[in-house]
Image 1 (tube, rainbow, N blue to C red):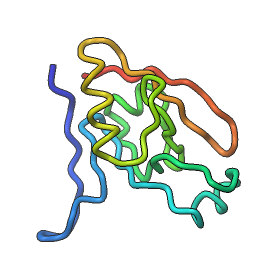
Image 2 (cartoon, helix red, strand yellow; image 1 turned 180 degrees about the horizontal axis):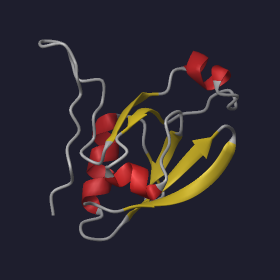
Image 3 (cartoon, rainbow, N blue to C red; image 1 turned 135 degrees about the horizontal axis):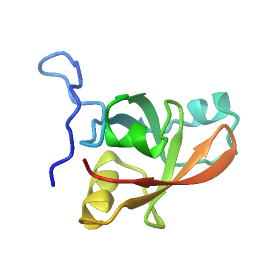
Image 4 (tube, one colour; image 1 turned 30 degrees about the vertical axis):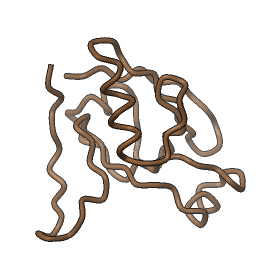
Length: 112
C-alpha cells in the first residue's frame, strides 16, 4: 500500500529537507535545537518540522517539534534511515519512539 506523499514546497533545485511519505517532514536534530527543546545534551534523532493533518503521522499522534529517536527499536539519525526502517515494517505498523519535550512515547504509524 502506498502512503500519501506530502508536498515539500521547496524551491526547485534545492535539496528536500526530509519529506517522508507518511505525512511529515523531518530533519536531523542539531545540538542547538535539542537545547531549545529542553532535551539532554547529546540527544539524537530526527526533528519533525511539519505534520500533514490528513497523513498517517498525524493519525499516529506525531506532532511538530517531536524528535523521532527510534523506529522499531532501531535508532534513526537520517531521513534515509527513517524511510528504510518504516518500509521494513511492510504491512505492519511501525513503532516510533518519540521524545516530546523531554518525555518519551511510543507511537504506532500505519501506512495509508
